[in-house]
Length: 341
Image 1 (cartoon, rainbow, N blue to C red):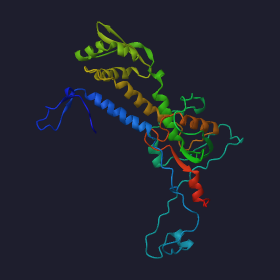
Image 2: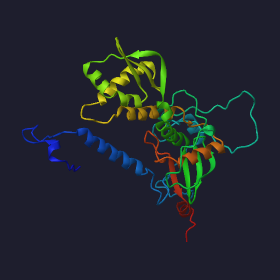
Image 3: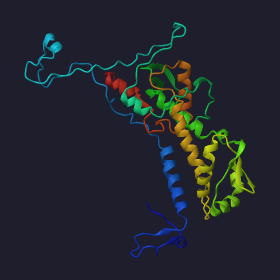
Image 4: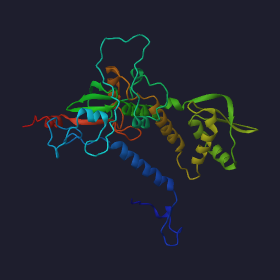
């Protein structure tokens, strides 16, 4: 990394052998570095490679065997008896995944809900943040905004294993993880929802325990705090908060105010607590209300997710970094099935 800074903003006398230097406004360098990294991550799609063969798809034609395998008699397999001296092989039964069906007019028995199979250990680990809250009503949520990425109009074909959506997108077939995609969509919605930061008057004032330095910063930046949704009154007993953003509970107000005052340094550094708080809350809540694996979706819900997928900056990864989709070009399918030449 190459930094080009004015000479008066660098102190080179902090180390006898000049191995370390001190920056006068180090927060500015850090801020620009963070912005550059964030811009690069947001502007570079994390989509998988879509050229070449399709990984994991093999031919149904018989493959040449490297060595002849002697089939054991059925009675020996059942009894787990070794005929050649090797140890018996333990046969592990895997629980079958659900088989999705297209929509029909058939109804179920009143009052009986469908029972999904238990999640595997890996799925439980991936969805450990999901909590026990209710799933967001996809049909009744507002669109995120205008289309901002290069995804074409997409048409849902079906749901596979009640976990993946099969989608046609121009000359490609997409297999989309419904939970990962909805999680990313919810993160973008929550992250930019300014209504969460609207001021709400508290039933009783929340007192603040501040030292001399914190009081000085508070009085110097009281207008900035008002713009954030905080109304702070000064009385004989000290300062107290009478209004604050709606998403903050009473128990969170004083620790949160201490964090903000720490950000208010004398050199004019920007306030990062608010933005970090927005990111953190959006991250925690995006997974809790997202549709889960083994959850049935109708075509209307699938179309809504696909429409929102075109309205987010990075539709190819969830907030945990997992991919949201796999792309299979039509040319790759033609090549696999021998339709070229």
